[in-house]
Amino acid sequence: MIIIKNKILNIIIFILVFLSTAAVLSGADAGIDENTIYSMKNLSKYERSIGEMRLLVSNMKNAVDKEEKNFDNSENNEYLNTIIDINSQIKQLKFYNGFTYVRGPGIMLSVSDSVIEDPNLDLMERIVHDVDIVVLLNDLKAAGAEAIEVNGQRIINISEVVCAGPLIRVNGFVIPAPFLIRAIGDLDELYDAVNQEGTYAYELKNTYGMEVAIRKVYNLTIPKYRGKYEIEYAHTINEEVE
Image (cartoon, rainbow, N blue to C red):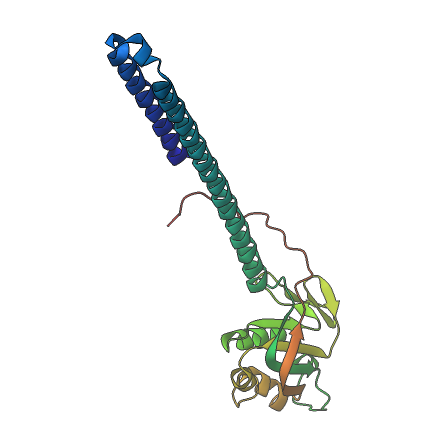
């Protein structure tokens, strides 16, 4: 806007200089014969000068109008780009925090209670507990899982997995066995994290006799988080706190 004001000021200065010059020429001609001063030749000259001046002012006005329009367009484009950038950031935040459906390669892991009759195992040792699911989820996260769900419930940073009698509760929803865990990420890394000897899933299957089935899937779809996301104690601050 400063550029536009400077151009308008230049126009005004130019007009003032032109009028001053015309006044000087008029004064200089004051001592000449009256018939000469008001001759048709000089009158025609002044008319041409006035016409040229009007054309110049008109051209400058058009230039100012064009600059104003360009400035408005630039300002609108900048505003539009800001809105687009904000929307892009919102989509990324929703994606990274589990608020969008996602698709990709991964694994499906099914876990259910033990069906073997082993007198050396206590009844509670043959049942899948919330802690078992939590450990399996952590193993998958450590293996680079980018999205995880348990029986259709998306796992995010605030998801809870707790016992609810013989069932478990995830994101406030009660889920019965068998527990189906689906994870998107590197196929081999995820598969090894719940299949290799020494992993927690391997121990559940081979030590406690639980039903554990694993398979690779090349095109999984995992739903978005559908629970409640409420922030009660944390709040934003303006300055960074160490």
